Figure 1 (cartoon, rainbow, N blue to C red):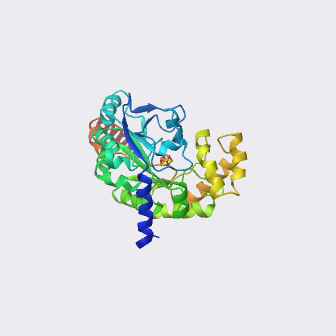
Figure 2 (spheres, rainbow, N blue to C red; figure 1 turned 90 degrees about the vertical axis):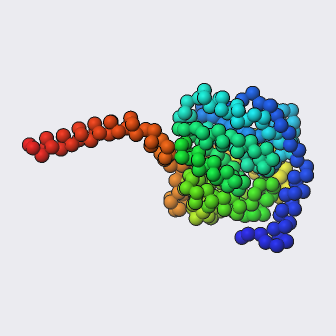
Figure 3 (cartoon, rainbow, N blue to C red; figure 1 turned 180 degrees about the vertical axis):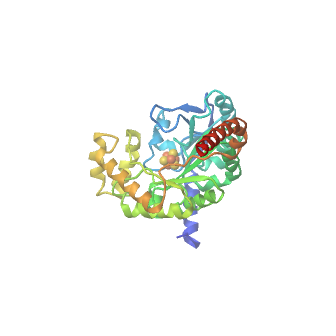
Length: 337
Ligand code: SF4
């Protein structure tokens, strides 16, 4: 339900107060495309910022600030915009195969508040809008993405584009606790609707799924239904994992807000940052069942962008004609017998 009146004002004032402790910087970068490890579903990542103001308690990307000799808390308080992101991208794209998949927003949210000020994500999309044949996936928790619908539609005409909206829960209070400065779940769902109405490929991910907090069949089912009703085509979900940098924030958060769960999480995650195979298997089966119930797929369906058809016709046509005439002569031979 939409917040109104004083409740809406209160949620907005919380955001303004939080903003006052965030500092923005610019940082030079040697490159903008980062190669992933083998077995990832994409070959390259792009992160226009270092740090993320949304400050999710479970965020695994806090290690990126540790690389800069900063604490895990500074990840959400000191945001660095990468300089010359578009120029770097233009140069680096020319060196990689067109078919490679590129994921935008894997260690930062490309549509966090800093984007309003720096526009780095938009400058990156302007580069993709002039490309053909690329495969680009964008992951965000922000409805600010709809600002760029014009560019996104342009990209989708010549490239394969998919947009992944992360919604961990529909419960606004829980979302505010876990993702203190991210847009409300309802705003994210509205963005899914706008993206879908614009004809773009969009899915919802409840990542990370947290045991006994967001993983019940009822919760995931409600979320999948809301996603489907908003026009999402696919729905996925992976379990929480907690590297040491994420444990430093998430475990104290649990002790404060979920004291009964905290000891279970502590004993589990001190053994390994990953949950066991049984849990993963149960969650996979649960999500599959929910997907079937609501007619959702597990990943974006590949489509042929409008501009590829024009470009591929000259080569496809002769082949097509050849195949058709072979088939026709086979039919006539058969009829003559
Ligand atoms: S939106 Fe993503 S990158 Fe940003 S804090 Fe949350 S989990 Fe981390």
